[in-house]
Image (cartoon, rainbow, N blue to C red; front, side):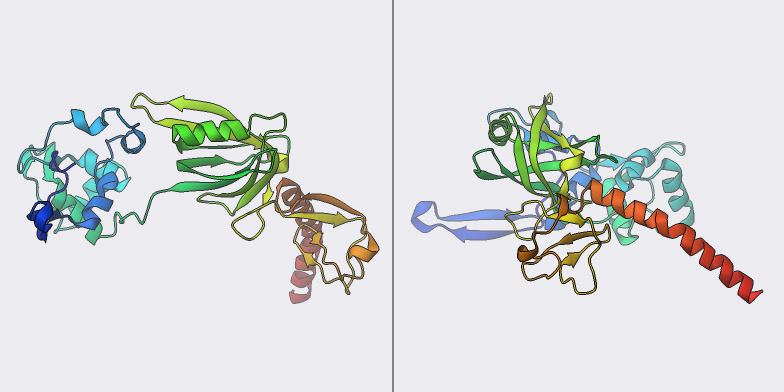
Length: 323
């Protein structure tokens, strides 16, 4: 990226290695400029850059350096940087007197200096500096109980809407992690997902039947892995990094006022040992399922539907009284 002219030094520091080579000048770069690379150059396949295997040629190696003063963008490229339509950028240019002026091109297809455009987009909150990579962290246990930690870059998590469906998780992985995951999930009952933290959802856990369903190798050498499991097994992960699915039961008889167990909106309870209604001495009769899973969602929805007619009748009564 230095060779391409995408980042340039903003200063330098001299380090004296003494008898190991003397004084060496080390260039310094702007951390914000580096963090913005994936934002300001959206046409680059950054997944391929991050996941290229050792010994393979980087996708960056085949690109030509930017000529001095020649790093220019059209309005369409500005739109891709800001993740909006071209019409929105044209509107910004028309309504904001401080929008960068064209440095080349024509009236129909003006070209703008990329650095000037990025500075304007930052100043007007049209783009932001990424705070870090998007990853999914997994704690997976095999049939033998051995636990391993993995990560998937740029994850995509699809959760089914009903218990008959299947949840899927995909992301970029290393060959070593992909082989280890396949080995853990290769048994008859698959692996257990003790804890999954991914953007957009709370921590999840799946007690078994997690398996690898796809390994996709991109043209640049990156490996994208896809995991799947029955949606009915999905539940909320227990607190702590070790994970494990939170399981609670639906009591055949609803808990009374004296119950000290943890209660949930779906009607489930997590008993504590000293509870007089559901504790160890009572041997509670409960229908167990993963807490926070699809079954909980269905039960909570059913409870809400049961309340709606009552709430509607209360609203009508209030309107009659007011009239």
